Structure formats: C-alpha cells, structure tokens
Image 1 (cartoon, rainbow, N blue to C red):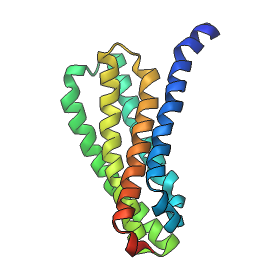
Image 2 (tube, one colour):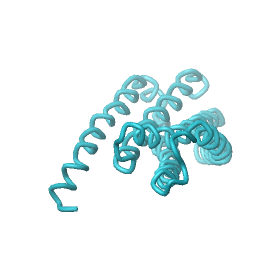
Image 3 (tube, rainbow, N blue to C red):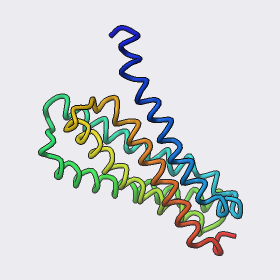
Image 4 (cartoon, rainbow, N blue to C red):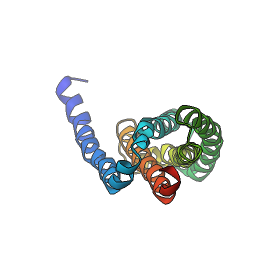
Length: 177
C-alpha cells in the first residue's frame, strides 16, 4: 500500500486513540483524592492496565485471525464471547493471584494486594469480552477489525482497569492508609 493510502487508513484511528486516551485520563482524574492519599496506588497502574491490555490484545488477535480465515463468523459471537469470558476468568484468577502476592511482598500491605489482584481479575474478564466482541462488531460494521480493534480494546481495558482499581481502592481507603 502506498504511504499516503496507509496514512489515510491508519491516522484517523490514531487520532481516535488520542481522544479515547482522554477517557483514561478522565477516570484517573475522578480519583485524584484517592491517589493523593495513597500514592503507592500509582505504582500499580501499569500492571493493572498493561496485563489486561495484553490479554485483550491476545483475544482480539485470535478473533481477527479467526474472522479473516473464515474459522469464526459473527454468528458464532455468543459462543466465542462465553469462551473468552471463561478464559479471562481463569487468566484473571491466575494472574490476579500472582499480582496479589507480588503487591503483598513488595509493599507489605495485604489490602493493597487484594485490591490490585481483584481489579486485575475483573479487568481480565472484561479484556476477554472486549477482545472478542469489538472485532466482531467491527466486522459487522464493515470496518477493518485489524485497524480498529486494538485501539478500542486498549481503551476499554485501560478505562475499566483504572475504574476497577481506583474504585475498589476508594471503597476501602481507610484500610489502605
């Protein structure tokens, strides 16, 4: 594909990504007081969002490949969605448990470990759902899922991850201080 055509195809999605990143920033700004009171929460932002984002990317890659190869159709959506929710749950239990242990050993605060682990578990389930659902919806809308899905799935995992993490931390704030 010539460079100008590639730019016309890709640049709008990157501009959309800039806009959606503001969604993550907005969620973070809702919890400024919590972050200010428990600054250690910031250390785990990349973990909660990053691990779940990777899980969402894995799911969407498999889904896009299945759609492209004809191994998966949008009619299989409910079955694929259920399957990816279960995989997200299993991955979330495993990775969330590890993160709980790491946070406990690293920072010595049991409640922080529970919050990070639980937020990761919830976000891994959401990542599975988003990773399966977004490419199928893009396919139905006749939008190339390979271009659109990564931006949307990343946004979903970031926004949900920050919301789960900081929301849970706010609920138990007195036990974190």
